[in-house]
Structure formats: C-alpha cells, structure tokens
Length: 156
Image (cartoon, rainbow, N blue to C red):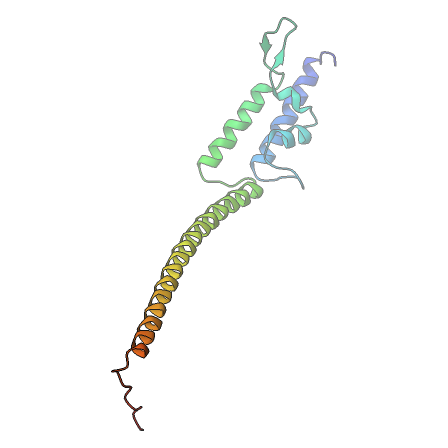
C-alpha cells in the first residue's frame, strides 16, 4: 500500500476521532466492543495503522495512527478507573469471572465438608463394627458359662 496524502490522512484522523468519541460514549455497533478493532472498522481504516511498523533495517517507527490508538486506550482507561461501564460485555465478563471464583470457593468448601463427613462415617462404622464384635464375643462367653442363668423377660 502506498503513501496517503496529507488531506486523506487528516480525513482518516477525523473519522477515527469521531468513531472514538462515539465508542467512548457507549454507542457500540452490534457485535462490536469498545476496542481498537471496532474503532478501526467504524473509522474505515485498517487496524494495523494503530500499531508500530518495522523499517527495512529492523528499527521501528510509529504507525500512522498509533498516537490516536494510545489516546483511545488512555481515555478508555480513565473512564474505567472512574467506574464507567462502556462495554456491557466487559461488565458481564467481570460479573461472570466473579461468579466463577465464588463457585470455585463454594465447591472447594463442599469438597472439604464431604471429605470430613466421609472420614467421620468411616470412623463411626469402624467403632460400630468393633462394638458389635464385642457384643457377640460377650454373648458367646456368657453362653459358654454354665453357672449364668438368664432372667425371664419382664412382663408388661
């Protein structure tokens, strides 16, 4: 792609600034977000114009509209720090991330509770089995001794 005229560059910069203002007001196109990709599409310029370029000798130079991309990011960051929600999708993503964190914590707590209850159940069953064995042993011992007599069952 060749060089653009200064008049065309000014028109592109003006289109970028208009699109930037529109996006930062929250006027987002369907399927778009408050990002450089949408900004480029709304302004009718290529997204690559917002990023640095490499010279043939390997050095870098700023992209033609890199200063506008930096201004956009700076203004967006300022709005976010002020607590404004420009892109509802971003707010939804943040809410969902918080919900996932909460659910992971609840799941970890439930896993811990289940492990504790499983340990308790095993201990209780072990104790019941030992008590049962002791009762069976005592009954057998009592039956083996001939000098022990059973008392008659109480009448009601």
